[in-house]
Amino acid sequence: MDGQHIETPRTPGGDGGNATTLVLETFQNARILRKSLTTKSVSPSEQFSFWREVAEGVGIVDRPGSYSAPFVASSVNHVTSSVYYSRYHCAEPSSIDRSKKYAESYGSDTLAFQLRVSGMELDNNLGTGRYFKPGDIRIFDLSQPLSSKNTAFENIALVVQKRDLLGRLSDPEALHGKILPESVMTNMLQSYMKSALQTVPELSVAQSQRVNEATFEMLGAAIMGTIRPDVLESEDTDGASLQAVRMYIERNLKNPDLTPEMIAKSTAMSRTKLYRVCKPYGTPMELVRYRRLRRAMDYLRADNSMSVELVSYAVGYKNRESFSRAFKAEFGMSASEFRRTR
Image 1 (cartoon, rainbow, N blue to C red):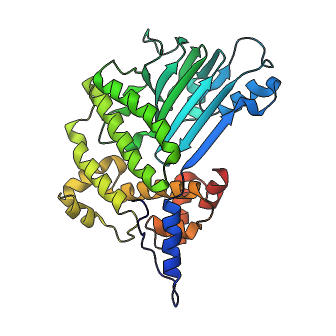
Image 2 (cartoon, one colour):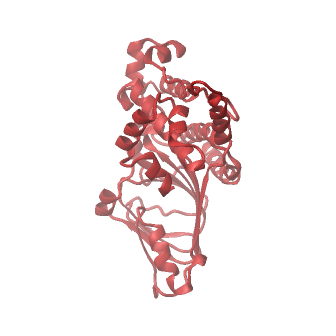
Image 3 (spheres, rainbow, N blue to C red):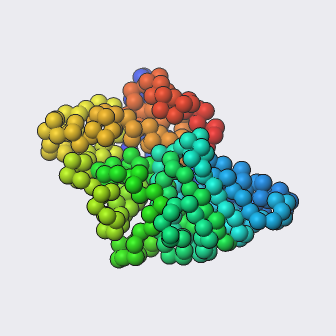
């Protein structure tokens, strides 16, 4: 996908089409968005208050001692539409509380796979009798409550949308709070998470789309190799078929004439089976819409030089108007507003 040409309508009476293709090539090669925050950017007396604001949406952060005492912490997030590749470091003891009410207010249809690099968890509300320790990978469902008290710590996290694991798992919600048992697959996932954090800063938008798929595969493989059967893929999910459908759609998002018939033919399945395997998303075209809008998020985040109209063509919409309506219906804001918040 790197540097590939993306076909878009040519400008009548001129060579605007070539210019458009060049812009899209450049945009595909733009770096993914990096967000870096550190309490060192503010005065020591304001550091803890700053970190509490950083954590908004995840939970309410607290600490022993005075709120005005220095508090050293930082986060680095490499952001794509499908996966956040993150590292968090907190040099002070602290706790975070995501109550049921808080989770309902800031509900998120995502799973965070957290690797504890250093530091011990002292307490949590999961009721498992297990505490997060170095080398563990724990899964956190951001639609559910979690309270955790920790010493100074460092975490690596892969944050994914549950819908991107459909076809790989039958019940993502059942994963909340689970620590992956020690195994060869868990060790492989640990290595992958560490290497991903070293690699993603250099990724282009196009490269990140391929790496995201590898991330989904690695997460699914680690879970299927370690967790009990009731949260694993079932026969009814037609997991392998859904993965084939998703891969075909990803390669052809730019085609505005993509149809269920084309998808069925290219993945060697009947129309009836195609609709069955896409049922978790509603219909095949709803899956196409889902992926188009998330690819658009990548483009909007990467650079301001690409117009919203070009983004709409790049993800397979025939005009800006239909893209704008779909984007606002999905995310509650226009594409231009989303770009300003990136």
